[in-house]
Length: 277
Image (cartoon, rainbow, N blue to C red; front, side, top):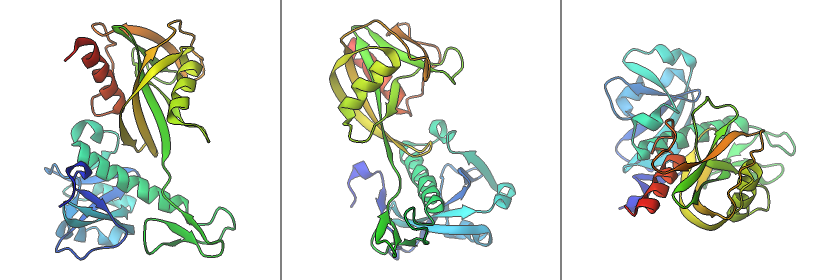
């Protein structure tokens, strides 16, 4: 029996021979979903009608004890009877965390295969490894693994206020936690100090790790933190952040990220800390 924290999924690069098979049908970065179903996978019988449009298939592992594959389907499947196309981002609000994690993995694995067909060193074609999810260049003896880009995201607290910012590409009124990619050779803690200072001019301390979330846009791992403010004067960079403000927990912005995102969870955790709930 799998640990509950794995949420029903166990990775593998080969079928294990289970009685059933479930398939995640993907078109580009969208998911093909059976109408009237709350599941984001289809069974073997449903997948049978798609097999002639399957451009590539990849074993992901086992989902709830059943072998699981992702199929890369041709665009013609967008109009297939009995199915609807769902954008990956829209599923954040309409499905469970475990199912979103599964389809996120599926989309990222397909994109990794498509973008690493050739060795970056010598240009030779890569081949799938036999023991794990890797692509190998036999000429260079190089293994390439799925790309994961670590990011830090933080809600900074000043008493009953928190620091939220608006990216330059976002509409007026939309705010979220500050975030950024880790630089090479940098720890998550160093990245937090740097990003908050770069984007808002604020110095922080007392970093508290909250949790992580896979974020398939296109392939980040979000590492979520709370932190305390050592300084409160804001000086936004104007490049990534258009504005940032201190918000009282009772007067938060009208447009906030949903609880299905790490940013939403961090804001909720900040309110819990302040109110003691």
